Image (cartoon, rainbow, N blue to C red):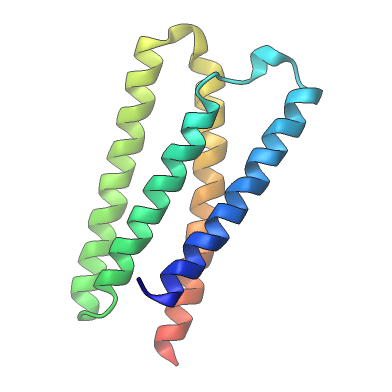
Length: 129
């Protein structure tokens, strides 16, 4: 495990803890039916997918740029398909929770995507120097 990856994972756990704390604080402010019961699993899901995706990108970063680009596009496509599949399957099985789940999923998707883009941008700067 490279030091860059260990730092990414450590920071991601801290970021996730902050998101969990915000969600817990919002539970006191917003109505209880606003939250999906799947929220804890969504945090674990996004945390796991983000770590795996970043790890695979780090492994590909030592190769030619074209190979790295292909790996990046493939990982992005697979993640997108996985996200769509999880959303569709959950909503079809739990129609009563569709709105809360969809909103929670979207917010976490944006949050983790922003984190990953910032981390990849910082990582790409280290490659250029």
